[in-house]
Amino acid sequence: MTNFDSTQLLRQDLNDFPPYTMGHTPLADLGKYIKLDLNEHSYGPSPKALAALAAMPHYHRYVEQEELRKAIARYVGVDAAHIVTSNGADEIIDLVQRIFLDRGDAIIDCPPSFEMFSFFARLNGARIVSVPRREDFSVDVDAVEKAISDCRFQISDSPNLQSTICNLKLVSLASPSNPDGSMLSHADVERLLALPAILVLDEAYAEFAGESYATRVPTQPNLIVLRTFSKWAGLAGLRVGYCIAPKPIATKIWQCKPPENVNAAGNVAARASLDDLEYLMANVRRIVAERERLSVEFAKLGFLQPLPSRANFILCRVVGRTGKEVRDALAVRGILIRAFGAPRLREYIRIAIGTPEENEAVLRALKEIDG
Ligand SMILES: Cc1ncc(COP(=O)(O)O)c(C=O)c1O
Image (cartoon, rainbow, N blue to C red; front, side, top):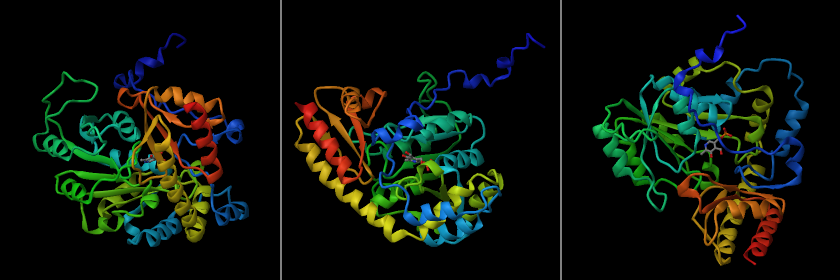
């Protein structure tokens, strides 16, 4: 079998699969940078979470998720039967798609948006109906309604396949949205919920916005809310996410998910975080206050136009240079921020909100660049 070409057996539809492009900093270098490129939480985990991780004697065991599920249910304010825990919000995006999408079914994606919606849709053999956001990054709900009502669309990567009839099942939207930080208006959410499709509402940044649709789920059969401990609780590296879904859907995801998807460390740290809300929410308030202060300071610089944000980051339009030029100029000063490859975002940078000291360093560096 030495001549056996195993690549012949690969799925042909993955030949042009675009990998997720975001770069990670090597572990050994993490402490060397002010890291504001991935919307993490500079304050880190809560002291109770760190203590619980150190005291846990059972890392050699598989750990059940029922207690975590109940603790999340109390935090969110719904019955535990609505909760499904996951290996970060990323995994729950995938699991939700897998239980709904047959090959060829479609999701609506509204770019610029969180890239993992379309990443998993491609991986799951689904089609992507692309309904671009308006110039100000708001969702074009008229266009979403139209796409669903006639199910004719432009497949994002095959513009000549217009007018294909499809089974459009999921509308995936983040609120606050990444990369721009805007929220869906309440009126727009109601219009989306009135459509004959599932609204998959990614609320990864809900704690910074101070509002959530989670408690609406028990009375709304077509709403699934996604949440995570990565951002507000500082547990990005431990990978704990969850969804709040109507009970029959939650039951189906629970049936289909890998049984050990939340690791023991993540499980312990997430539960301890929910016992340390006062500490964690004080940091969230600090980040929100810094976000507002930085927006004002960024706008004073000659070359940045910050967009209003409800998340833990700010998207800024860059005037007179590209986003990548600003990113590179900050990188040589030891500060990592995000620039984008997509043509529509070429003139933008996204900066996560760090500690006040980190934010001051960012401001100093930006002033230097401004010259
Ligand atoms: C909108 C959105 N959803 C989900 C995630 C991923 O969260 P997790 O770390 O829980 O996988 C991110 C991370 O940046 C995000 O911006």
